Length: 283
Picture 1 (cartoon, helix red, strand yellow):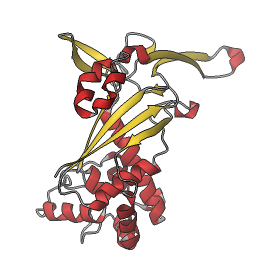
Picture 2 (cartoon, helix red, strand yellow):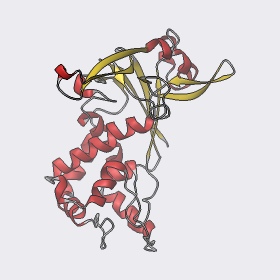
Picture 3 (tube, one colour):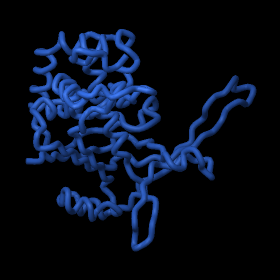
Picture 4 (cartoon, helix red, strand yellow):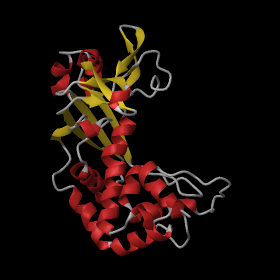
């Protein structure tokens, strides 16, 4: 049976989350909040939204692998750059690399030893690991997303219909220094934020064959996450809180137990780039 879990996040401070489409080619001096394409009243529109890929990366990939290295007593300089790329950005196949021929067996061996890679997937030098277990979707609790929220978590639908996602946005202007203040080298910059108090509904789906250690990685990620999302975190922006979760409270136990049981093999696999196999997969 497919396993689905719900999480409700609440912003304790405004969220800064820049739009990737207009961030490079923006006709205004204001960095717009992330937007996605929707059909509103029969017309296409770009609506303030949250990037699922960013949530996946911040809550799980970065958090779990920081936690993993710390738990195993490994410093970043002790592992090959290709392993770093795999852990923190999903990796990429090396130019001119050739498939080893037994990549399916190798990939499953890697995923069995490293539940976080089973959860999130990635690529080693010569091939892409088998499909990741995690599916993640997210919706701001706002009018434009109320129809979707009705199907996912009906208890939030009424709250979602109370305000538009556009009503949740405001602008903040700050000064970036480029030299001595007396020389007038102070540059103003403005960016949109989503209001403190905004909520985000997150749905996590794991495939039916996911072992307990993979769900445990989800639970561990939620616990270890520093609860910041988006940009301007040095100014307190993006401080979040988990106000509801259907992830079992003890979910992380299976993952932490796995780390303790296989610590030596996992440590050696990261340092050598073999990832628990008989050959170097990340040189």
